[in-house]
Length: 270
Ligand code: R5P
Image 1 (tube, rainbow, N blue to C red):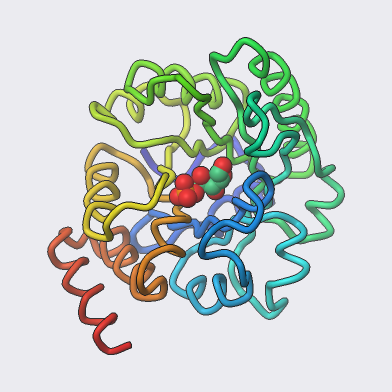
Image 2 (image 1 turned 60 degrees about the vertical axis):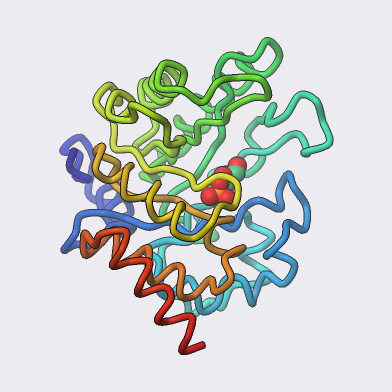
């Protein structure tokens, strides 16, 4: 699937393409938005340190407005994917029961290239609210030519398998996302092939560096257009090296072995 969608006007297209590497046609979002429902997540205690200089090797930065204001150098020349949904914390049983928390004018003021919103499919309490609020957010974003990154949220007790993820990913595209962030799973080709729009994968919980690179490789091979990774970068032993290794994999089509060797080499150099 190509990142280019002919049904976009110039402003939308320009913002959309700003997150892609022109040569590879792929993207790496660096996700550091976890604090909006998880508080001071391991690796994000010092946001400035977590962001700079790791972000230099990513294509886009995904975060909240609070983090953007307090921790990001305005000289940053990377597009911002602004988290605009929220509503519950990690302490709440009804996890990720989210609504629109940042109006589109604020996203414009903050110079967002993308806005991001989590949709919860399949839970008894949050499904309807998140779908309707997401649709309202898409209407606002489209009005201003800002592409929506639809985030597939997986509720407690739901299976992250190809059946569930293709259903949720497809729904988020049908509802108006221009790009969907979802999870990797066995049989991921089905998720990509049945999606209406390009797909990036989230990294999920921290795993060994080589395993995270392998997951990214598998997702790209199955047709993902990139990754939107957080914990597997900022919780890595060396986050800057991990981001560079990911870039080798995503943009240079490197093998897992090459990317991991590169990670080890950069780490050794400190
Ligand atoms: C979580 O809801 C946030 O949207 C994160 O941006 C997303 O999960 C990606 O981060 P990670 O790779 O840590 O899963």
